[in-house]
Length: 263
Ligand SMILES: [Fe+2]
Ligand SMILES: [Fe+2]
Image (cartoon, rainbow, N blue to C red; front, side):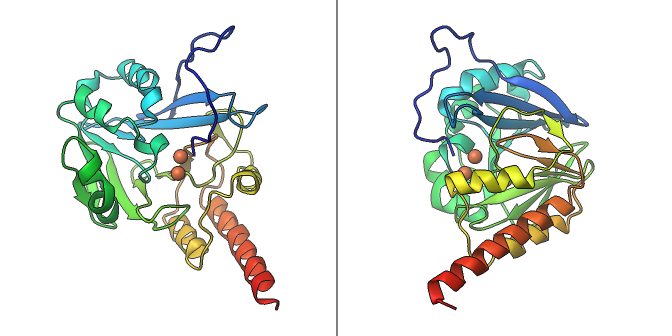
């Protein structure tokens, strides 16, 4: 969801951009870049998450243009060469545009993604072959357990998936709950309302018959934190929020069908 907006890392009259680093959970870091030019005046954040363990994991490579900022932020936490796993929600520029920059900077790092993402795109676009993850597969990264979950077309992309870290109960939900602004790294305030406002602006979700059910299945994981790619992460009732989001999408789908069918 980069948006067709021109922006630079160093705009005239503005200080050089830098990723903001926050530890949003045990050994779980949010590396956030706010771009004021996208959807002004609120602007738009791009968040990348570093999960430390014996085999550190990065969720979202980030835009190729952002690699200098995101890699500098990672380097403030661990030497980049220590990075072991790189994964992301789906194949889009903001999720994985810098894939080869990371593979070059971290020679031992391995891209990991679901069957569709690897088969359709990643085997071809990445400099090294990916590790294919089965739906529900758990990877022990040494101190953290990462479960990969297929979420086809939710919120968009045939290859879409999320990860769930079991020890902290953190659901890394990619573009789900996308909202505008440069809010706090972690909030207990409502993020569903802002996400639906962003949906009204961007129409980024592939609304379909499995949208709500897929999101409710994520709620059944009983997450304690939602790590959101665009916007604040959430530490309120993190199981109720996906259910509320699913309800909203279900109502929108019913409304759209009723309009289409004239019922
Ligand atoms: Fe996306
Ligand atoms: Fe995104």
